[in-house]
Image 1 (cartoon, rainbow over the protein chains, first blue to last red):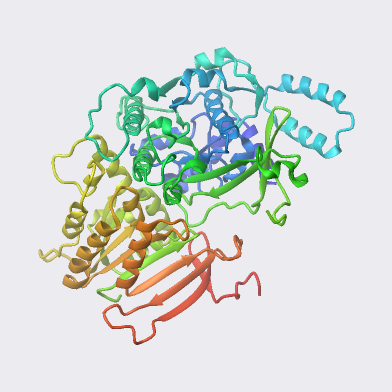
Image 2 (cartoon, each protein chain N blue to C red):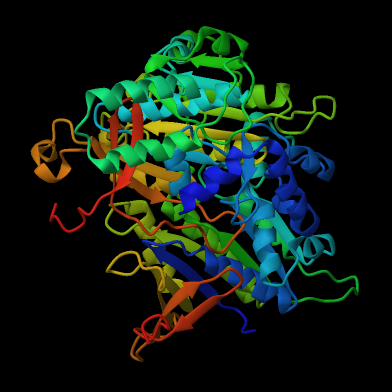
Length: 389
Length: 251
């Protein structure tokens, strides 16, 4: 099964990734790197960036989303230089959790983080990140649960056991792990020393909104212009775009933007149908340009269920690379549907990019549900396609 | 290579970018001079796919056969730094850009005939991927239609070249501007290639359906337009076509 295969290669040390990488290096080394405008000599360094691996399909450099199950559905992970758009579930519960997994994965891998929000202070968001699952902690909990749930079905036990086999031997200290993709315990917080050891930049819109603009007003809202300038500044100053030969960046910039499009950013597309119809799409276009020319990967959560003008949603989808929609069962009629009783919601893979390729990795499975149980977020195939809903 | 034609590529419920890659490699191999306005992906993306299809964009660009406007990269330059000279994408900086004249000037300049006796290319070709993005960037459908009209006058009539452009069909998402653009271009096109997702949903062996429609826009439609429909499956280095229901997976 694909999941086991990818976990297998990830469980090996970075050494094995490098070996695979150097084999590709000779034949089609252009695929190695992202579309950074840096010279070819930077490509050989890219292979050894922590927390990345080349796609088995086309050698594209990938990072983990923080949720190995989601990585598998996306063809191995999130490609460096691209945008992952998460369509928020109705109360922003699970999308906010995915956002945190993404950032937590960045901390574990030693990536630089850029956290942007109009609602919460990024420093607070970082405090709320889930703790990574370590071998001995998990074993202890597993033993406890085994006692408490003595009538657990054998499938569940096997599922847990299967994951247990693949957990890494992780150091507890602030050292980046050699594994690709980690599991997180949603009930525990990330250790303070790991957060403090990480490098991050926060953009909290209410704090930045008062400063003046030095760009002509185009049709972008104030908040989006400021955010773009902030992102561009970090990319340039810290050398993620390879433009400065002095700053040889060997790291990935993980950009996380929360609730983009919501009124808190100053955009009115969630309030009215005739709102500013170009601000968000223009933002996404320039952001895409920034990402394609730097060593970064971006996750955006967006309350698309609130956007009044449906045309904007389809344009936003076209301007994003990977699009995943979350639909939670809370408050919907599906909550009481016996078919769905084990799950918390559905996950829809709406779009997967074809990068450097005519084809892409498309999972055959189309009906996917997720649940957050016993601290783990799991995604499973369901046979609910013909339930008539 | 026919001349003076406007070909419209359109995708509905699926990704029609394989058509763009096809036409790019087709015209480069046919020794035409190509101006590619690539708004939605990076140069290296097209280059890598191009290599699978047998062309090198790097070589074509270096020897002057290909003029490549890399929209994403240029947009970053234009947006963050004021430009001294007019830039084809300068509408990104403007609050209410009226038209796409700078972009048209860029195309006209790129495809102007060279008369210093060097190896003449065959007809000039303008390729755009894709026009729907221009709507997302704040241009109205009318401005985009005007842009194509001007390009058509120069490229198709004056210089006997071709234009190939991709527009997304947004289906039932009520994107009026996009519908205006799509309908307007459909009426002007000589050839429409429409890639559609299958009505029955995702299928591993048949990725979609391609409808080909030949039109004669200058004549009244007393003659019936010819059309053909194929189903296709996209592979790593090519696309295979077959008649409806005749997928090798089914037979």
